[in-house]
Length: 543
Image 1 (tube, helix red, strand yellow):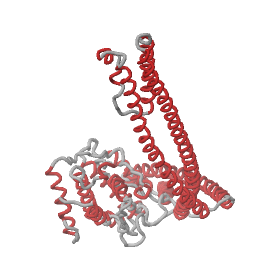
Image 2 (cartoon, rainbow, N blue to C red):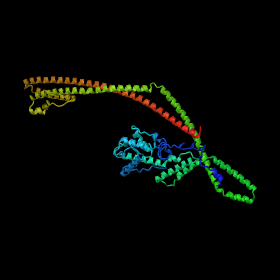
Image 3 (spheres, rainbow, N blue to C red):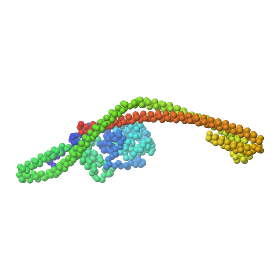
């Protein structure tokens, strides 16, 4: 190819021109300071962790062409011992003061301390909180593409004999991840302000993807797909202005060639045509390059239109959000009760709730005392019932033989047995039946035993009066007890209703305040995110 053409084929992205999709000279960092290798900064390394994924707690899977290889056998003692050795070597090389014995006899505090020590090599600003650590650990490990899931039950008893091997394996994976990133030094590879920054960035991205596929042993097409992506990325960043200059120079050469053909002799024209034929390959290459450049220009033009449309849509969305924020602020100002007043009211309701609980406990103890009184009354009634039964049995002995006395059940009337109110009523009814039976027997023997009948009749009358007194006394005790129980139940229900009402009021006030705070925080976060995006777009494409 002629040197005139070679000089115009400059390296892409010598400066951030208007056709650059990035809009800046450096893709990673304007200075030489190296960013911390935390998950929010290593998204450019294509390690499978998207930017800001840790803060959002959203796991970003790896690309579809690089599947995760799950081959970690946590039940293998040799594998766990290998992970322990990796952790020990890392702590020793970093001069950590953590005792490696925790790998065999762990505590929750040591587990949190060693994770914070290791993870600070990715995020120096990370601080582990005891209240949220057990929720953060599985999320962070998952975002770093650890192939095995860390269950909630595992984190509840992380230091137990069954859960600790999984934790050791995850810590070993984290140490390996940190070590490989430190050795790779990807930030230094793609950093800087030189003219080949973009080309080196795409080269590093291409080789990183090929290396991951080679490591997972899934290479089948010779990295064809990765090469096509790499070629397209490089072509998109070529300076489109140079294409027009090449085309103009080509036309000028063609005109010069036509003039030379007119002025020169036949032999000189043949020599020039022969020399021209030598450049046919270069001309075809330039034509192919021009065609590809035109396609890139059209693609970039379409992307620019999409970005402009996106900016307009986001500006509209930002105005809508600002209007909603204004409406929310007006609603907050118009609320009948402030957040501070709601908190004071909630504290008052809680104090009233404590007082109601104390009264409820007091009234709950009243049925116990009443049960003791009823037990004493039942014991007394049981004695009287046994006495009445004994009298009936004694009277029946005068009118029945020993066998008849047992056969008709009179011998069991004087037995003293534990009874409740229902049993007393049933036994009194049984006494009435036995009394009627005895009375009928007395009538039958009246003709033969008038004198004995008179005595037995007096005794029977006395028994009837005793039974009536017992019935009256029992009914009175039962009525008094039932009335007292109903009064206690009524009071207890009133207290429960008051307690439930206070709980509902407290929960409603708390949920209203919490919902308002959450909505306001979400709106502020969305506004900040949109402002950052608009700022990036303005810096990238100019206001």
